[in-house]
Image (tube, rainbow, N blue to C red; front, side, top):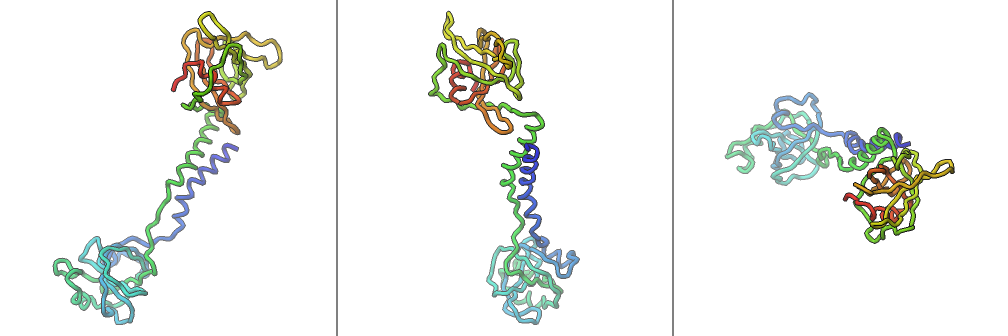
Length: 293
């Protein structure tokens, strides 16, 4: 199941990249490229950046709304466009539409241009053999919503890495219930463990049972861990946690189907990860150990 879920999340992460590919897009080009015949299809769907200069008269002898589109890449190159609605002057815009062939009176168009549509009085060179039949609305450039893919990608990778490395996985945490009082003398907390307690070992994937209890010592309270016998026999003797160097790390153990509060303890006689039924039980034990934050 983790493998199937991991693959499913990775496939889900590809969706924001695949869906935009299904949206057809016009060819981004320039008036210069069209004028030089770089568009092989005579009726190619194209998209250009530039500015609109409305025309009063039809440059191809057919009724309609016409304008001169001056390319932003080269303001000395332009092409006639035709639209369904009358044009207004637009200093910067994006258009899309299909190429059409026609005999364009380029000289008459150039002569009638206002000074602001020229480059210091020099009119742009106009394509005399083609014009663009504009779309009702300019086709926007394709957008990939890649941030949506981050969460399913991370989840999918975590699941597959977990399967590859092996569950369960211990993840450290800095969250500790400061209200939890340390375990007192005579109190005990049952736990499961994976690792080594004295001479007894258990696998975290198949944890053994343990009893953590506090007893009084000559210099204060002593935390001990006693492994429980799996077969119901005599349990090994309790092992002191401490007595020399001791370090701990609170966190959680992530299994395939659940997340369990955990405390990892390293000392001279104990090298184990303890699992608890409640976070408060873990934190009462952690209060007795030098926990790394």
